[in-house]
Image 1 (cartoon, rainbow, N blue to C red):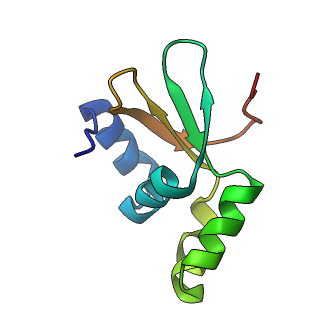
Image 2 (cartoon, one colour; image 1 turned 180 degrees about the vertical axis):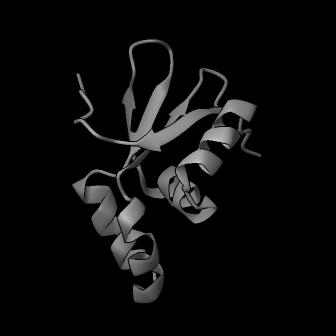
Length: 92
């Protein structure tokens, strides 16, 4: 069972991110360390291609505008926050 913090739940609502996007992000997204003990999950090019092959065309088109979404997982595996990427994520 995945835990979503109150802060993350609030951000999901404020930013209009559908639950299907978060589920897809957790299943298909690329992970990178944030160098603060957490993990950033986002859709890179490969993740988007895997998602496109797995989803029905209509469902993919429905969430395509939200593929700039990222999530931050805490050390305990809970979703700490979510948002829309405006910059590249440093993978180093």
